[in-house]
Length: 225
Image (tube, rainbow, N blue to C red; front, side):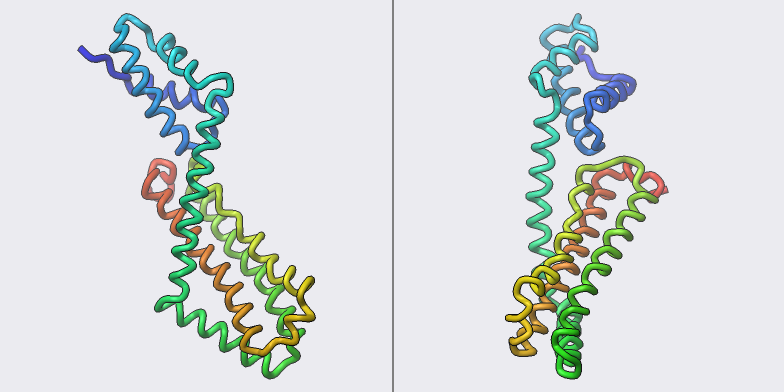
């Protein structure tokens, strides 16, 4: 008869991963699945082997760095997937109905630049992207703090808002003289593009959180209660 892990032993595996500095629940799930499968393979070879001995045999295969390589590998894989998702959400900003929002931003900027001094509107617009990015980031953090019960690596890679928000300020700082001399349509297009970057990242971040809730519902017990 094939030996299988009990619920108690599975719980011990989760505790084992936490003791070895795996703080992300989604990485813990992957490791526990791997450890459980490997332990059962050990038992097939030696049915008399106890749980702790089998676990130690399996863990020794990870080398002196333990689960560090697995965590780093997961982080790289998730970041790669999220970059791809971000590109998809960025492209969607140029499709209906998001296109209407992009056009509206361009028109508002163009009209404002036509009425008021170009430099003032450019500076105001550049600075407005920072609080907008912070607002989106804070709202997401509040949601996760309220509803998420476990830390996920899947939702820990979403902090590009601040990096994106400083781009217009850097542009004005280093290329301001050049930008102010351009046609109004070009300036409007430039800042519309920067707004689209932030909105696209916001949409991408929401999809990531939705994916996390779907894939790991047990990590959002309060939200799903």
